[in-house]
Image (tube, rainbow, N blue to C red; front, top):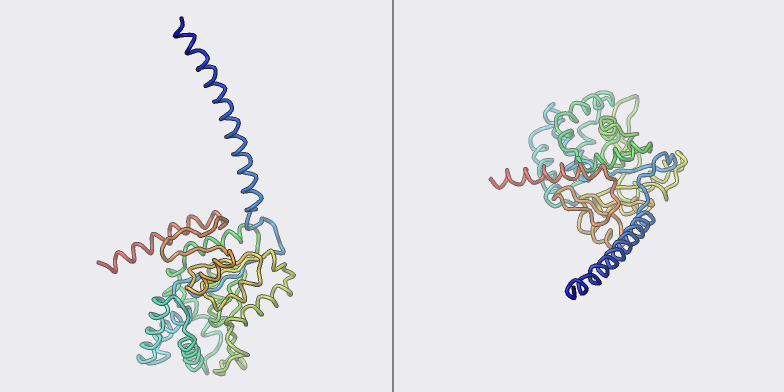
Length: 303
């Protein structure tokens, strides 16, 4: 009996401690849920008509540069000679490996494209752009970024591409992805024929920010509730305009800046996880798909 008397208080004491532990755990869980809810509100916000999303194109939505893929398609259609294709290929390879835009390469590519399309009808290039998208671009869309854009669309928000690529190509890509529209570089045309000149300057760097600002004003958007996505430090002006900036497949300068500013990060080139919670849930599936594709491609190259 003495032994049982010794055990009974331990049993009662253990029960009391268990109750205390359970209550403490429940309280901690409740507080944690509240903190997460306060720290990370639902995003994108469903039904917020004054919010929108702006996506850079090259290396953000699509692997590589749209202008270079467009060049490949034009070469296939004998718009220019082999030496021009070799230059396009080298610039594209550099861009893919370095993961950052080279201003000289981009300028050369734009000059080449303008000279190539000079004298051709806008309608002809639009039609060819549809074909080139199927041939070279569709398979290079990052699934993760595509999921991010779809999350905004599903929330009832408008989504635009913002790119230095020709606006005709950007519009084709936006339409194929089901996006609202596209802002891009405008080539001058007279009576529907390209003159070989630009209207203003390429939509690059600060020009992108100005385009987004102008569109937001025209569409009565609240930039503080909008999101922007890019891979390049050149787009910091655009990213800084909005309340929800995201660094996607960032170059080294943008990665450093994003970490310093506490912006969200996502890298689909390696399958790395986001550096901060808050990416729309739909992007998780895309991230896995993107990471798997990258891993398979790397494995094939090594073989």
